Image 1 (spheres, rainbow, N blue to C red):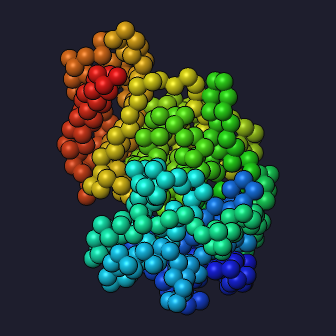
Image 2 (image 1 turned 90 degrees about the vertical axis):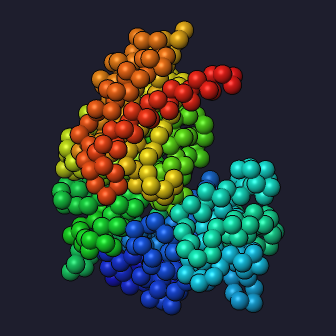
Image 3 (image 1 turned 135 degrees about the horizontal axis):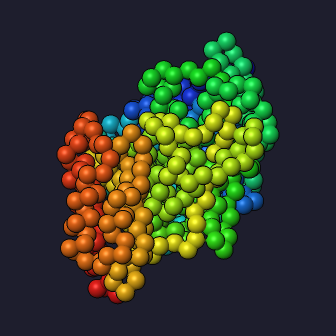
Amino acid sequence: MTIRLTINGAATQLPAGPHTTLLSALRSRGLTGCKEGCAEGECGACAVLVSRAEQDGTRWESVNACLVLLPALDGGEVVTAEGLGTPGNLHPAQYELAVHGGSQCGYCTPGFVCSMAAEYYRPDRTPGDHGAANGFDLHALSGNLCRCTGYRPIADAAYALGPPAQDDPLGQRRLQPAPAPQATALQAPEGAFFRPANLPGALALLAAHPGATILAGGTDLGVEVNLRHARPPVTVAVDALPELRVFEVGSDSLLLGAGLTLSDLERRLGDRVPLLAQWFPQFASRLIRNSATLGGNLGTASPIGDSPPALLALEASVQLVGPEGEREMPLADFFTGYRQTRRQPGELITAVRIPLPLSPLVAFHKVAKRRFDDISSVAVGYALKVEAGRVTRARIGLGGVAATPLRAYETEAALEGQPWTEETVRRAARILGSAGTPLSDHRASAAYRAAMLEQSLLKFFFESQEAAHDR
């Protein structure tokens, strides 16, 4: 039971169980720069580079090795901090961190180096972008936490990086195709892992194993494996299925494949959907977005998942395929209870459809203890159309205030047909504050959640007025 993996340029075969993580496999080979800190994708101490297809070449992306199941990388390519440079020949990211004093205890440093290297090799990094002379997007490091150095010297190191040299090996590697995902079948006494080659193969596996765990980006399952010792009897990986990686821009809708990573969607969409452009940077961190998928986030049906509020405001629908064929339903009808949906046994989410045209007045508000790389206490998506000072269309999606994500229908009705004024909004905000059935937990009290809903709508209104004044 082995998988094939290229590590730091060397092809190798690794023993793998169905629940082995990339982190544990790397450390077992002596690559101990990859650390376990939180084991849930929040600290970035385990960050490594993986190769991903980019047109005819390769894109280096950073991921949390603690969340990646090793069989899901069968045939893939990984670079660790040890593979970037040596003590006598430091990689530019390692050198700049050293000379700028960006490391003290050093525990977090290899992860910072890998995330920094991924941004260093980003093909569209352009001087002046993101307010940086070298175009470095500091949000590339938002999933890496440091507890002793402080972030200023780390940022200084990032902003000191120039472009890769012409003879940079990993820079040159970008010109070659990335390894294609391999069909994988790994069976052991403790469970089985399958990566089918196509959609019919995936549906056949799900028919044979109706209770199988479906794996996309793994950012949810990896946490279950690490912290709750989950050991699914059968895991079926679907993220590489071509049928789940569609991206279509039509005259009346956008079709977003359920297997595309959020980073991939962010690049493809650009500013085409302003509400999602606001949402993407607030979804966890770049490390997570490089793995997480839209289908996975919806399929887990978490009431605090960040994608449903935005997609509910956009009136998105979900496409599914299963033994009975294809079907499509509004996302507002998809969730039925806590982590429960209308997806039937044997079905897969294949895509999300967003209707066009889009409402022009939008916002995504996320209330959390940290601004980035955190779970929402409350999340709200807004999409409104205001004509001649009157609200003609209002769609509001909510997360964190009930057992499921939900539409704020009563608040929408209180806004539609009314003048877009402070009086109207304050009246609607009181209705929004009573939406759902919020609970008190370690993230926020029920009263706080209700208050944040009210304040969110008021904030949305006043920011829209300021934007209109600026125009």
